Length: 431
Image (cartoon, rainbow, N blue to C red; front, top):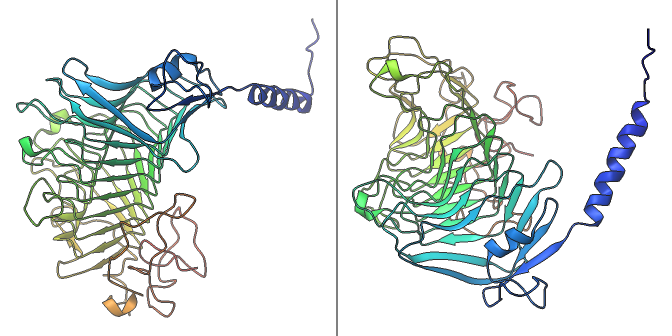
């Protein structure tokens, strides 16, 4: 019998770390500038003109620095403004980052091809996009649905960070296919598709069949349809520490437009025979919905369980709408914990056929009656203001419980960290 040779584990781990450090040391940097030239070597002094040329040059572990200015796209034959197909690798992402404090603006409003236009199409994995502004994608066709600011269609393990997506005639950001993508500290706002009466311009869309897509620290406001839309998503998505407000109107007016939900789940409304065999369990946690035309949080006929933990709904037409499909006969029990609802609408709606498991929420706890006096402020001023230097959400008094509020330590432990004896109720944990 041949003896087995066992190698010590620590040297192998050390070797892997050394190799990773060596790869990082030899990682290349390339630069892109609106007034550059793709015949240049892509240095700081002689930058490329396009992301396409930088992608050709970059290898896993490299960084492409995007200089500030407007990258304008035009024409009537191009369907995709920027197509990303080259992948990085685990531990070796290809980075497309804004240079220092500059803002690279990708403007697609003169791209007028009669198709469903994509500003960015991401078909690669292990990428990191950070600090980009994406605007002006048009919906040229009037007999079909939306175009997209950024559309992920086959990319996984990507990070999309500090993106400003606005003024697109369709969703600002849309995951069609791919898993384990992190959308971090991004803003999507003022997206409106007038030719479709505003019914397809969401802030963020997550519709993939793969698991593990996360929206964290994002804001969606003044979008003509919904803030966040997970309709027909077969893979479980997670939304945490996100805000949604003033969705469902023609931007910056009180004119009705699309659905008007802050956070929308669900799908498969009419035909239970079309329900997937595995129903995704989406989680929405530590998130805030206010002043949306319709729902703050919308189950949207989801045929399986949803989890709503530590959220705040304020002044929405409906706060937590838990309606199920009319023809769906199987019980659906959504789980709600540590949530708060304040406004003229009742906390729950659409739940009569399938009562939720909604213990330890502000509306059903003894000795807890929520009022405006429980919060440091109910004025949303500043919610669309500048983010903090690290890209995180603004630190505001809006809808944060007062230190003496009955909402403090009134919740129950779920899967989330907390301070004190027990979790606070609502989106914000008082420090």
